[in-house]
Image (tube, rainbow over all chains, first blue to last red; front, side):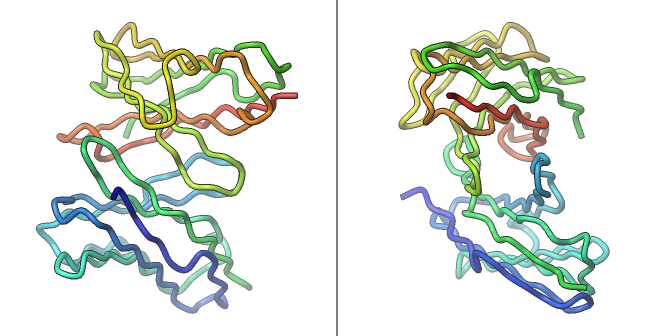
Length: 110
Length: 116
């Protein structure tokens, strides 16, 4: 069925460490994979996205990798900072809509 | 990206009443989307609103409860009708700005609704 699984649900790292969040999707036809960051009380904000014709995309400290064969994609945050603390959502398209993962609460401890 | 505003930003309503939420975009967009986000939860799509046609509702959401208007390419409204405490949630509109309309979505600031 329509499903995007996201893990872990919570992640706590020390400032400066790396954080990795992984999502798996069910529809092999999916070809666009965004990541959103939602700070407390704020709107979800698109931070990076990747299309199925590339395996990796980087933007400063964040990167997304895609494995189409295994149907999973991951968000990598390097040199984490306290301002990276937020809820992160992955998503994948299915029949004209985005299906969102359940979210990962990232806590970066100073 | 698009600049999206929503009104009201929050409201407290009595059960049995209705609330209309407005979503305004600073540019013309083909598709607008309405989501619900319950506290601590993910985003659930309510419906997709296309200008000039009826909205397409997701499973579990019906037009009588959540009527949607899309009078032009920059504006949409969502009404939450005959509210109950279970409707307490954050309601978000979004717009798709990619070549494929559901892609590259940007969200409005949300409307926090509390039903007593």
